[in-house]
Length: 152
Image 1 (cartoon, helix red, strand yellow):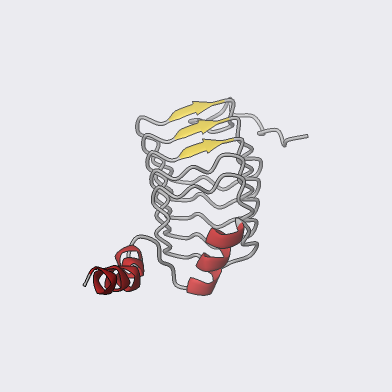
Image 2: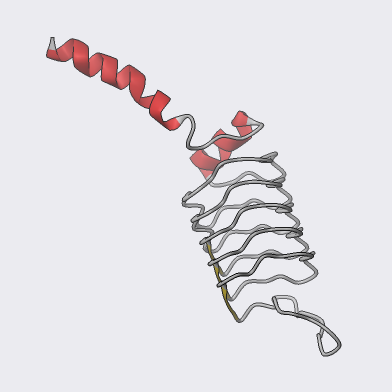
């Protein structure tokens, strides 16, 4: 009886996690989660809430409308990535390369953004409510705005 219960539990366990992480392209999602690399992947609409993506290589990935709330993106490379409409609420974004990324309409409410490269990133209509932004070229802009330097 115990053996049957254990076998049933082992078979059912993956079903509990299928809703937690999903994307339009499940092969790309599996590649990211197993290797930490997904250059040019289609992760549009992916639910990566609370994901540990430390050092992930997501250059030119499509993360449009992805849920990255509470995700840890420390040291990730998102050069040229499309994060338009992404939910980055309470995300940890430190030493992240967002060079030439599209952050239009992204939600960074309560996000912690430290020492990240946003050189030539598109950042129209960002939500920055209660975000902590240090040593990163995200600001209000206006007449005194200067070109954001690229990382050396």
